Image 1 (cartoon, rainbow, N blue to C red):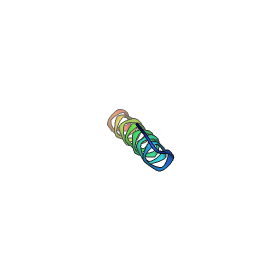
Image 2 (cartoon, rainbow, N blue to C red):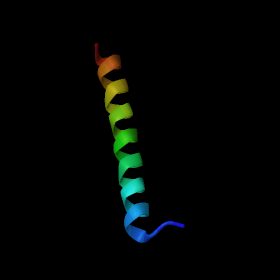
Image 3 (cartoon, one colour):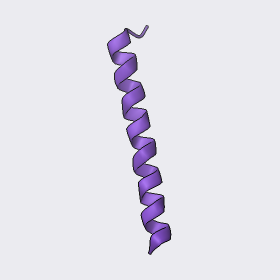
Image 4 (cartoon, helix red, strand yellow):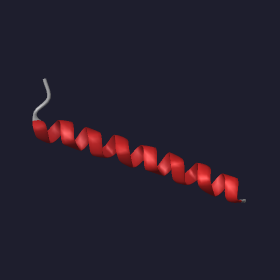
Length: 31
């Protein structure tokens, strides 16, 4: 049972985590 605020918060957090993972991979490949 998600209200809209909780669901949006979850989605934003998930997207942010994915971006951090991509950034970390990019840094690793650049080195």
